[in-house]
Length: 375
Image 1 (cartoon, rainbow, N blue to C red):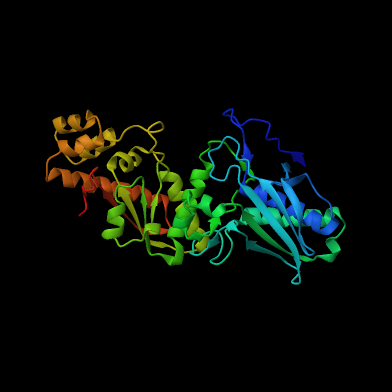
Image 2 (cartoon, rainbow, N blue to C red):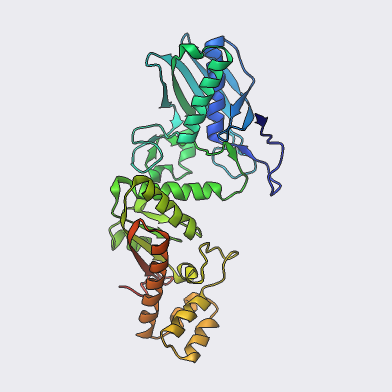
């Protein structure tokens, strides 16, 4: 197994870091070593999920809590990635149990799941599946290291974060129904600096929360436009209206994957937003970031031409500075026909990408939040 060196910079020249999952795993390993061998580790090796690399993690402190339990602390280093938990103390308290199994508990500063749709069940500590696997591996590594695997004792692992309840207020945990603290996260054990991975992972979580309790319908929004419509007209809860930012395609893929895992269909998916973002998919742009996709005026103009708009109207739409400007160019009743057709075409494309969704409904709004097509 090869060491993963954090001294090697990421391709963007910035410093990588350790996930909260890696920190918690290192703390578990150090605390367990003290419990079983009365040995204090100043550094420990954490096996990464790829099973080909390990990460050397310094231990901030390790000590006995009482005659039967130990505690180890690791300071979170998020590298150069903006991270609310950077510098926080992640700790693990370990003690034997009588059930011959590894059990997880939320210590001070680690949250508990209170809503369905997360990666952990309601009532469970907010410790995601991959960090749990890493900690189980760490327990087995320590037992094997000291020749204790034949005994197969059980252990209670209590994972916490100093000041975690305050840190969590700066995250989306309260909105996701995770109360009491932060989540222990990470799929690779490594924080990639300034990457989109954490953002995408968050959207995946939000979608799964939105689908919780077998919700018949959810909404995806590129921004805040349409959020009031989702709640006041559609009757969706705040959790069922997910902001997907520019990640249109990825969000749909997350939704399809979650539905496939649950082996069910979603009755209706609502797409709510400004046509300046949503209409970009008519030109094949599933990443709607301005740096990765063209503005939507040409796509809108194509639809207008297909509907028989005059050449002058199509030219005016094509040459508009923004999609919002188009809204003022096209008079009624042609405007409603145009936006209705754009809504229909967007829905058809999305339906192809999400076969587990029975019906797709699109609602387009101007910047004032007024509907453009469907009433």
